[in-house]
Image 1 (cartoon, rainbow, N blue to C red):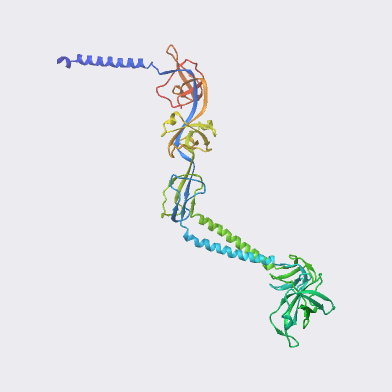
Image 2 (image 1 turned 135 degrees about the vertical axis):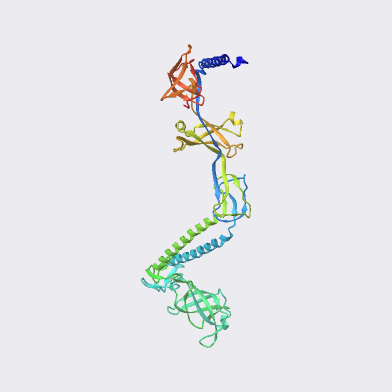
Length: 502
């Protein structure tokens, strides 16, 4: 017991500790000469960038209610495919119907007014209503014409009638269609005519006897008999009966031309005795007030139609239509629900094409191009790891997003639709930026950068470490191409702690 308490024991303990420390230090120092190395070799290297993002439809539109109303009818449910312009729901528009009806009535009234004024303007041109000779012209240039005022007569060529009294006892036996001879008092000329009417009403003649009016039609070769006085004989049972008094010829087809509008006579194109065809212009009137009224009516009608377009647009707001073709991916409507203006009614997504955005470092963005091929894998679909879905770059923004001094550009990747894919799944994209065959490569962790120089430490056969500057080429996440500074077969040291070059 005294030995353990003596100074010799303590001395021995101290010596042993010193020897242990020296031994540990020796072996540790000896271990420092062992390095993790890699051999410079020729390999194929493919450079690429990667990124991931949430899948979204290539085209998606939210449909908002534009008016507040009650849902009257739901025509499609979530999951249904709908075509562009197809109605998916209807809102109750009954409260708006009276506005539509009032506007429609206003347009109808304005249209009638416009057409009426336009007709009055058209009627300022007075036209012949039949073919024949003009007589009794009542207007001249500068005179004022009122509506329905008689302008002239137009008498058809060569057809005249004369009505004569015959003694009742004989006239009662005169037949319509029988031949009559007419004697003109002025020229002592006789003409042949045909009985067209026999009155059944008896009257007292000038001599006090009972008479009946008989109408006889005479056709001339073109000259007028209007106003000529005559008497006639009709053949009754083989005997001739003479009219008891004279009569006066009138034109059978005399058409009165009347003004259908009012205005000042601007020009007269006919004169008494002139022959005209139906539709020929008799005269032209002017009326500045009608022109002004037409312009006002046209403006009123145009304004009302514009208002109607606005009303129809508002009415259309009660019919919910899809703006694009696609699948209804979000909808929770049911009949009777009240919706406020601005409420999302449905979300329509075109699932023929999917997209997702991936962040690309500013050092890599210049390596990418529009329509560049992309390999897409989806986390939820394990089979896409071995068999990636083909995609392409469709959008590359000109402006990036900088956070903590690092700038990234969100590139849009597009791929075709697939029934296995669902919106919001996470997708990864691998974009090859270059591919080289049989080039010198080393692990990317072997690269060291200090003071702006890039180099590697080469372990020689005699254990000496030689630092060499290297020129780098393409790289990927694991390897980097060496364009100069080392040779195939050289062993490069991989530092225990990377300096964060890549």
